Length: 403
Ligand SMILES: *Cc1c(COP(=O)(O)O)cnc(C)c1O
Image (cartoon, rainbow, N blue to C red; front, side, top):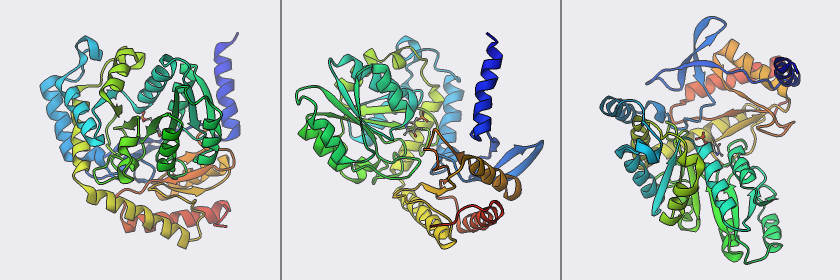
């Protein structure tokens, strides 16, 4: 077999469908977010970033930068081992304490990424509990799907955010059979929020565990940034809360929070936790600094919501097809992968505005979109510049206006 030809042909398929991924080559600039520099065809240009998951601009928080630099200076740059074999530094211990405090749980467990936290936790729990069955929202993130698949547990999928469909499935399963409902709070591509209380009520009624991915909500919702479960007073109803330190917390790393027994179980049996080197202590220190910072700065969350609402209004006033969203995520429908990529290219090349096209398989075909993530640092001027640029691009490419 010509292996290389196989690889090139498979990538060629993506290119012909218009969904080949091209990465923007960026230089983030601490202190200037959401401004950045981009390497474009040999030039280095000033641009505005409109699609970062650094939702609060915490990547440039001076407290976190200082924590990272000081810790690297004192500890060196690497952890030096897996958590079990010399890789647990005091920074990791402090970080897990901070996370548990945030979610008001007995314990937490930190991972190298949110993706690994989901994969490891779901695959470990659902494979080791005998006869476990998983009921999973149809729009759950790839990392949850992979974790469930890896567990080989029986799986049922309920229609997205549909509690009637969830109950229909729960009813069909033996009440005494161990079960886990896996869902998210904020779904990051549509920006909708799950009916968390209703799902928790069903979990109680049918004796199921709840596994909640709050990746797009931690730092952003609730009085202390513990997520939608905090905002809605449901923190004690969730069996396993999963989060990331890579989005609103602006650094990198994932975690779960829950009872000591549950965390100890995943710590002791989860291969994705056991056999992987722990994160650098400087990273753990920076994560803790930002969790702490956002815990104490609710005014940033208020500002964040105001910015998102303002951008939605500016888009709809301009006749742009902004999609319904209950959260801080602001998607605009394009509905075609090639046009979506062209719109993104045009924004970058002509207007120095960076927003990545979102195509299949991240979203369904026919719902290709531009997904904007306004932060507290995207001011009115940046928004007005964006709206004018979008109107120009919509006209030039003949894209559909709002219905
Ligand atoms: C980004 C994401 C993850 C993975 O988190 P990382 O820390 O980036 O690995 C998990 N779940 C959802 C819903 C996500 O969007």
